[in-house]
Length: 276
Image 1 (tube, rainbow, N blue to C red):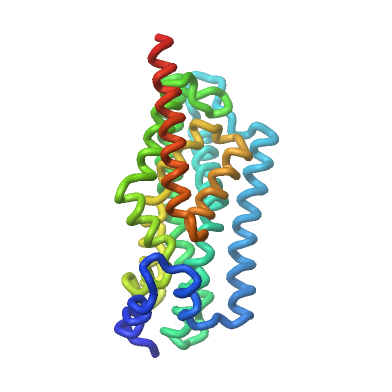
Image 2: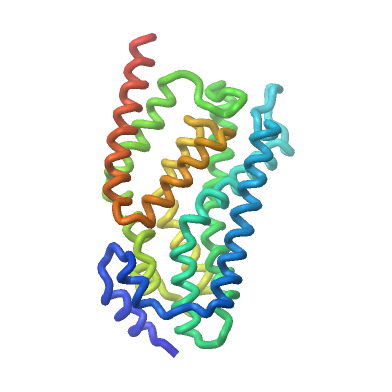
């Protein structure tokens, strides 16, 4: 059974940015486990995207035409946001999940890595479900203030400019960098946050979800700018999050895009204020 000290030693053997070198030091995962885990994550992601595509096609998520939200509509919007977060964020967590499963099997040596991995993913999804609840409340508030169109896009350039400017500038902050570093280095994350047992798996999933939320929350807020019902916008953000986490140029690309987005937001904000 691998000790906590051995796990910490594994984390010190690789650079902080992780990458291919860190993955080579991780014990291999049996083919059966890889098939089970990847199939499970793939099915979850595909079901989420099927729901999103069908919802966008049918207009099921459009804002209500009446003066107030009903309880049923609030629940439907909450479900939409939670499913959207699953579809957008689970793909970017696959490298972390696979490495967790491999290290978990080596540490525990009881052949139950798939069960522990499921709990790890559950903790991760819980964090993004909480964000989905917050986004639903934000949507309700913006809708009440008449700041959203029926397709849930911000009205006018001022609010859109503020969202873009905030998202672009956040890409340049130390908090963004710190959270992204932890998302990009699974071995270091596991070495520094390892907790044994099933409850430990849930706690680690929650911790990873929290870092991921710290990395990407403002990008998810851009859904209000591009359209919560826009599959192309949702897909573009999903692809950006994935590339930023897994590609060697991810951090640099994120900062460059942050500057461009901030500039776009500043122009929109200036044009909106000038038109008043």
